[in-house]
Image 1: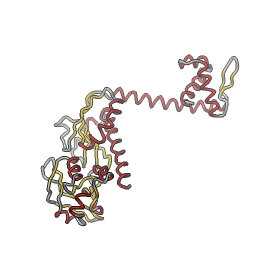
Image 2: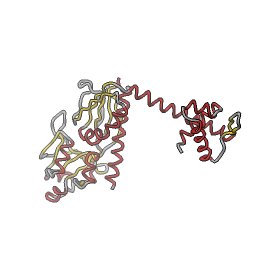
Image 3: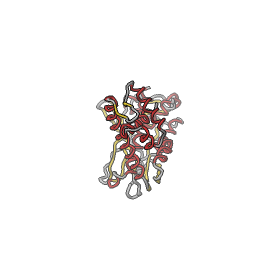
Image 4: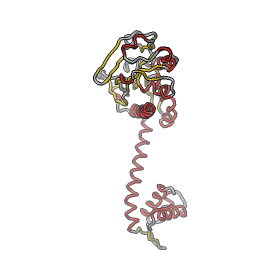
Length: 307
């Protein structure tokens, strides 16, 4: 039984006091309307109408059920109308900038359902790992790691991350496993180049209340998160990265965590837009879409790491 369809037929008969007029109003046959009402009565195990040759009247059960049906159908119509208005309002060009790994791993696979839902939106996506100036580069929205200090931007914090240190099992078998952060100086390390200073970032470590920030010697450094992880998988050296970026490699056994007790809080992942655009329907729907992808992946990462 399609209960919603049956409820529509029941409500229309009750409002018009006629199976024939209800059928004409709904554009279906009288027999179909009668079937819908009969199915609903069997489902509820009660009679909804008093039927005579001249008139149709509600039973006490029918009157009570009609009140609830009308409320449900009105809520449904309001929800439908809200979605229709949103779809009509989501149009025009939207320029977004996202990290390479997020774009390739999460955004692109999910993009067909987004573009199908909002066919009037012209989406332009930049993939890169640098922090951009939204105004200078005429970008409407970005997915960014770390705090946002610019007063003209509005940031929505989506998920938190942790920094973990890891290497391939092959590298660790050949070079040994460091027991303390200082021992990393004797290893081959893979650094992450800052987009502003073009120098490798320091590595962060925290155990309880003890926090260390080390400037380490790097064998090789990249400006791409994805490149650093791929280099670590291929045994180039040890890498420090957010847990959300290396979870798949860890679950597959391509990377192994070291210094696990020294894991430190990482940068939160944010959805950021220019302040004048935050109420735009096209900004709102894409921000919600990106947030949904990140939250789903965060839950998946937690399950992988806990497993």
